[in-house]
Image (cartoon, rainbow, N blue to C red; front, side):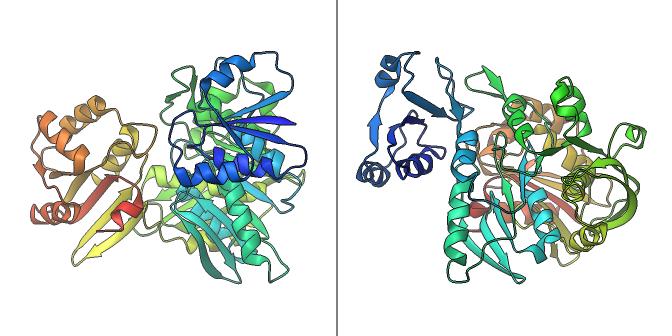
Length: 460
C-alpha cells in the first residue's frame, strides 16, 4: 500500500507515523501549509516517510491507482482524496477501541458538552479529549495526560495512545471515550453529537462549508443534533432520519423533537428545568419515553442547549436518568470557557473561547441584560482559530447596546473595535484592568467575553 498524507499542520504527522507502522506501507507526507518544524521533519524521515511537495501531487495524476490520498476535509485539492483525516482515524483505531465512544462536533458548545459528559460518566473511567487537553478519570481521580492539544481528528489517536500508556501497568483501559473533534466525526462513535451550526462558515477556500464537513458525523451509529440545524441542513437526506435524535428548548417543537425542556428557571448559579423525552432512539435498539427534572449550571439559553445535547446523547447511550441528573448537578461550569468568578460583591461571568463569533457575543450580552447593574468586558486576539470574527457585524451590534451598560474593550480585538464603534466605551490593554474598570463603572454582574485560548489567559 502506498499512501500520501496531506497537511502536516493539522494532525498529518500523527497519521503519517501511524501508517508507517503498517506492514508493506509506503508513506509520503505533503506539508501543504509549509509549517513543518525541523524536529518533526527528522521524525518523519527517521521513520522512512518521504516528504513531497505540490509538484509530486500534480504529477501523480488522477489515475494513479497505487496511491491512496488522505487529506483533511478543509483542504481544497484539485483531485478528490480517497479518504479524509477523519476516516483515516477510524481506519487506524477501528479494531482497537472496543468501548463505548461519544464524539462531539459543532460550531459552538463542543468543549462545554464534553465537560458535562465527563461529569455524567465520571464513574465509567472515561478518556476525555477536548480543546482543553487529554485526561483520564480512574476511580474518580482526574489525571491530565496532555494540555494544549488541538481537536483535529488525529488527536483522537494521540489521546488513545496516551491512555494506553497510562493504563499499561494496570492491565486495564478506559471504560468509555468522549472525543471532541473539529469539522465532523470519524465513524468510531456509538453516539455522535452535532451541537449546532449557529454560524455556517466556509472552508476549503470557499468550496465547502462547516455544515457539509460536519455531516461526516452521520457515520456514527446514532447522531444527536439540535432541531434547528437538523431541520435546516440535514433532514433532506433520508438516510439521516433513522439514526438521528434531536433536541430543542422550544415547547412548540415538542411534536418534532426527541428531547425538549420546559418550566425553565434561569439563574446564574443553578438553572432548573423539566426534560421531556419522546420516542428517543437508543444504541441498543430501544425507544425511550420519559420525563425528569434537572438542576445544573446553565445561566442562559445557549448553555441550556449544550446541556440538552449532553442529556440527549447520554439517554441515547442507555444511561439512566438518575445518573444524568447527578452528573449535571455536579457540573459547576468550565474554567476556561463558561464559569463564575466572585470578586467581593461582584460576579464575573467568564465566557472565554478561541472561536467566539458574533452570535456568541449577542447571546451572552442578551443574557447579562436580564441582571441588575450589568457591565461588559469584550476583547481578545485574532488568529486563534481558522474562523475569524465578523468585525463589521460585531460593531453594528455593539452600537445597538443600551448606553447604560458600561462597555470596556481589551486586547488586540478590543483595540480595533474601540476605534470603530460609535457608542461610549473605554479601552484597557490588560484584561484584569478591564474587569476592574467595569467594576469601577458600577458593574455588579460583569460579562467577560474574551476570544482566546485559555492557556493564554492562564498567564494572567
